[in-house]
Image 1 (cartoon, helix red, strand yellow):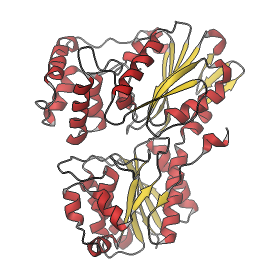
Image 2 (cartoon, one colour):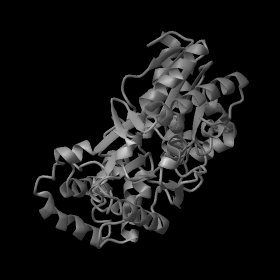
Image 3 (cartoon, helix red, strand yellow):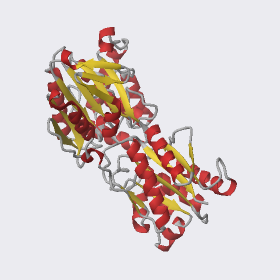
Image 4 (cartoon, one colour):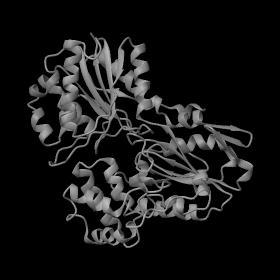
Length: 456
């Protein structure tokens, strides 16, 4: 593996204490390295002459006329680069759709840029080109599909009869509603020309889907909205989700009609793949949130901290989760629960933010800011959270860190943490008191990581 494949994002933690800064940067580095997509490809796929081994099965590449790669997501570019290096001239080519700023140079696989998380015309055009490519393949071809976080937004060709504007409006409403990624993707699948198994249905080729999972529990039908997976959800499920979050009447009427017309189709059981279709369509999860947490735990131990990974993912409103994390921090310091300091509690998850203000922030920043009140007055303890993709909400920050003096620092600047939480304006607070975690695009995406570190 060349050095360019292993290039790490530059992690910058804004914190006054240099020891805390270095420690946190080391822990973040470890989490990101554990879910490095290029390394994940190299560790999972093994090529010996013309035999491609993937876990307990293999592909005889002499049986395939062409090998083509397509994909989408924040990690698809480094995945494509690693695949190119492994297969060499056996790989005919292909294309992956990536967000702006997530470039990785490839020679055989074309990079197509599109907007994220709100889809744009570039994404529609690229998705149609991708489908045209898969439709051109034959039964003796091998199609390798690379999926990672962000694929649902990037693979955005709408269903026949729907416009991009309708999809954009619906996506905006869902992202602001507090809906989970699973719920958002159920709706996306029913207004798409490629999601919910439709990519797999578009081609007779043998398919190998390689996945960097940004979905807790690794539900294959939810990751990237499952373009190569039979969809278990229904049009009624999509309608129910829009109604549950009180946005059914806000989505465009054309989209309402589309979902209602789909009800008659969904009354029939979804088509189950034949045995041959199942054998020609395999899915491999290369890395997920748990692997990132374990990477952090190993480094924490090396740094002299007792690591403890919370056994459940963090889900729910970011403010509420943050208050709970703050309570955990206080218990850790005052009672040595669940382990005595020096210790590092490690958690993964993806809290949600129900937007009702005009502030700027993201789920990790809001979650961490909500922990600050519980930490007030404590020493030698901090709480940090960051998105492994390097982007927390519509900001340039990956996340943030708070300690026992965060509330005091904010007050000195004339800032109210309570008001910032109410207005979902966590970014402004951390910008003023210098509490951000900055990485830039990391080339991976396996949810968020949250850390509670008590030094003594």
